[in-house]
Image 1 (cartoon, rainbow, N blue to C red):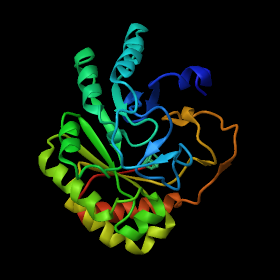
Image 2 (image 1 turned 120 degrees about the vertical axis):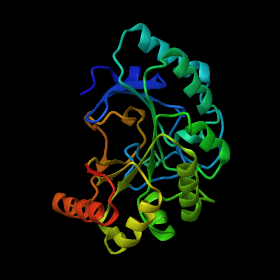
Image 3 (image 1 turned 60 degrees about the vertical axis):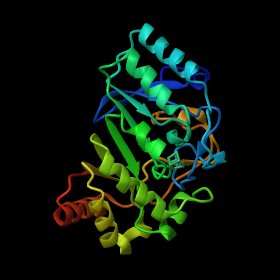
Length: 266
Ligand code: SF4
């Protein structure tokens, strides 16, 4: 349970730090903030139903506000191991994301900066350019074709599976840092695994992470769900049927045998 009251969490564009089993104290940066804004509306999203499903890039929150919230964390001597851009939706929709990355880099040059992105905007050269300065980029890929993407991720108009794959492949060619693929595996994927494995292999990721829904889907939007997974849900939620642990383990073994890639199961 977070020690901070909801009201306080909800006023800041910087949240956490959240304890991450892989990275230590991960401080979240929310470049969207005003409501939930994403180019996807995933059936399992921890934010609940996305309020603004869009491909429109804009300055959703002022860079200065984000940097001021970050300075407050520094002034309070809060220990941070890693910065993660994520928050209230798809962070690359923020036109001023690059300014935020640069500003925080100037304030804390030694803290690694990561991003969680759904890769829908990676086909845009400026977006790839912005993300190149990050230490780690984690892209979401939940299936091997347009049909499954539409079922799982319910994208904004104009998003296609091919444009996502093309964006990731281009980014891999240009990016020297660590690229991870995060997959939310659902039973509906079962017949498509071989094709999915091939596509992921072609992206040459440093790591693939297989997840299955372990948190409930909130029936309404709540900003406190950004990155904070330990809060008690005091509103209506739906539990989703994911894959069982044995199935996930079997799949991850099959995947690493076939592709030679490193895989993590969560
Ligand atoms: S991409 Fe992420 S933020 Fe957007 S709807 Fe899916 S899970 Fe939620």
